[in-house]
Each structure stands twice: as C-alpha cells, then as structure tokens.
Length: 510
Image 1 (spheres, rainbow, N blue to C red):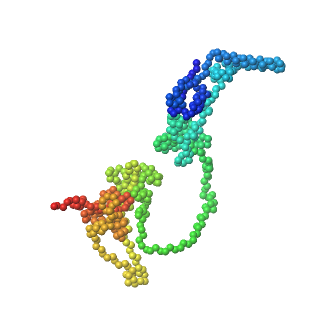
Image 2 (cartoon, rainbow, N blue to C red):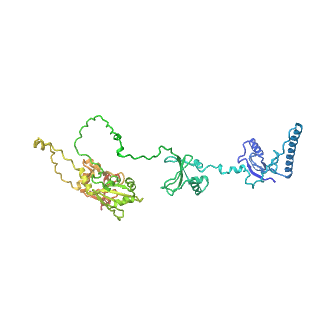
Image 3 (cartoon, rainbow, N blue to C red):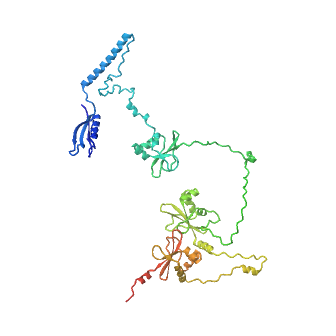
C-alpha cells in the first residue's frame, strides 16, 4: 500500500487578485503531484478558498508489476546474448564469456518503472567488504582538526597581538559541554592553568603558538598568535684576563661639542626668592622614611602626604610583609587601636592606616611647630642689603640703611571682624556671606598667613582638614568661622546667630 502526505492549501484571507494567478497556483500543485481532495471557496469571493491536498510518498508496488519488470529484464538480457552469438558465428570472432552477476539480486530494472533499487545486504557481516558512500561521510578523516575548528570563532585581542576565544562561547557554538572542550585541550597537548597568575604553557601547530589562560572572572580562554622568527641565538663567551686586554681597547672619550657663547642675561633684582610649596626631604642620612617620603604625593584634601603600599612595594622591589617589617623598626604598625601609632623623624610625623578596600597607606605630615616655623620664614621680610663700608664713611652707611618701621598697635578683634565683614559677599547657595582668604589678603595687601594670624587673634583657628570641626566667634549679631574645601582653599564665613533671628522674629509689645 502507498503512504500519503497531506498539506493544507489556502489562498489567504483576501484571495487571489486575478483568476490567472489562482489557476497558476493550482497548476503548480499538480506538477508537484499534489491531489486536491477538499476545496471550499468563500461565498462572497470566489478567488478565496481553503482546501486539503495529498500525494503518495512511494509508488504502489504489486507482485505482478515486479514479475513483469523481471521478465522484461530477462528478455533484454537474452536478446543481447543472442545478438553477440550471432555476430560471432557470422564473423568468426570468439563469443564473449558470460560474466557472473555481482550479487544474487539482479540490479537491472526498467528505467521508467519507478521501482527503487534494493540494497545488497549479503556482505554486511564481512569486515573486508568495501564501505559505502554514507560511511565515508562520517569518517573521522573528513573532520577538521581541533586547531582548525577554532579559527572561524577567534577574534582579535583588544590588548596585544594574536586572537582568542572563550571556552563558554565554543560550548554554545558547538553544542558541547565545557568539560568536553577542556578535555580536548588536554588531549591536544595544552595545559589549563590553575589561576590567573600561572605561567602559560605554549604548544605549536602549523607555525602558530597556542596557549590557555584564566582571567580574573575565572573564565577559560584559548589564545593564538604567530610564532616569532628567531633574531639571534645564544652563545657563551669566553672571559679574557686583564693582562690580555690591549691598551687601546678602551675608546677615548667623545669630544665635547662647542656651543656658541650665550648673551649675558640682565641681572635680576635682589629680593626674596619664592620657596617651594612642598618641602623637600632633608639632605641628611637617607633613612627608609626619608626614601619613602620622596615617593609620596600630597593629599588632595587637607595637609600632609601619603603613599600606597602597592606602589611602594613595586618601586622598592619588596613585598608587603618585608616593608611592614622594615617600618616596624621605626615603631610603625597597624595594630595601634583606635589611635594610629606615630613615628617622628626630621620634623615629620608618620603613621599607617587601611582604606575600605583593605589597602595599606603610609601618611606623613609636618609637625605643628615645624609648620608654624616654615610659615614664619615665608612671611618674614628680607633685610635691606647693607652698604659697602670699605673706604666709605659712617654717614654714607647710615644713609643706605632703611629707617626702622613705625610701631603699630594691634587692632582689637572687633575692628578686625568689622573690616573683614565689609569684604565678604553673599553666598550663592544657602544663607550668610563668605570670602576667600586669598582674595581678602590681596585686597588688604597682606599675605595669607598675616590674615590668618589676625583672625586667630579673634579666636578663629584654621581647621586641619575639610572634615575637622571649625571654631566659632560671634560679633555684631553674627557668627564667624573658617573652613577648608577639597581644593585646599580657606574661606571665611558668617551668618546671623540664632539669638538675633529670634529677637527679630518677636512682635513688639502693644
């Protein structure tokens, strides 16, 4: 019996545009040997229909058809043999020998009967029998190698030469487990490292290098790059004794290139030279703290300097434990309780701390006495140059000396805050007024240290850091205080006191 396959046919919701298109659609079904067994048209549109079609999967086969096909094949064979024998008798040529059939089943059949040629299963159990074409398709020799299969999936590395591909990506593309791909890597001679810091193991294939690495997220990656061409080879040299060294072996020093004389610069007027903002390490013995002090950077907020252990260990080529042991000789350690352990050397104070990520930092700051002394040296006026007394008179020497400055009485704190209040401007955000100390010092023709010293006489002290609690002073119904921002700028602020607000808010008694 025949097997049937079925298909639902439809013209779509709107139907065909013209009857010619509908006729072509039905003709195409007939050419594909489909038979329409059910057909319904829409009542309002004859060009819209739905239906069901079928066709046979295999042609009907009966015993009579097979016998008739075999008889025709036998007749054709006898006719060919009779013609060959007749030609041999008439021409005298020897008759061709009869060839035995390759199989028991006759493979000759009619070309137009549609009967499928049966497969010879006589030698299926013979191990020496030749394989069929379907067996060659699955042969292992036809598959690409593991390294060749990697090439279409590799991408260029963003950092450095070569290409790479992830094992998880290959598992999705090849529909395999990651363990199977790792096993294939080991079978190909590659080694999977234990962690990201392990040394890679290289293998060579077709002039390229391959290796496997693991990144910080624990992902396994396969890498490849071209094998570099050798530039030189290593050979061992023989040492030469000092007596065998020729006298002219040392080359003479290169002659210095003469430069044209420069024009003399005009002499700069004598006066105070600006000192560097950041004090340099002292020129004394280079101890460990002095060496570390030269590698530290200034803090972005507040005073002092700091340096991280990851940077210092690389710069000094020592591990973290070794650096802690060397600093312990100076008394620095982390286990100091809530207050850090301090160490003093050459006017600097050092201590250790840890940040939120667990990194160790070493910090340094000038001692308060040293800081005050440095500020006093910056604000001190240079003395006037003395006159040349050689061969001169005492009158000329006295004439060149600057007159002593007139004694000035210190202003009371009330007058200082009143003068500062005139230079302050309203805040852009919030209530009150403010002014930067540097701008106020420029308007008053004084240095920053002198302005801060005047404010210190009123009780306003400079906070050590932006997060330090400021000191307050009250004058004229307002509260004054100093603060330091993240950029290191010092500002003077003022706003109305709470008592003044309450007194202004009260209504007058009737």
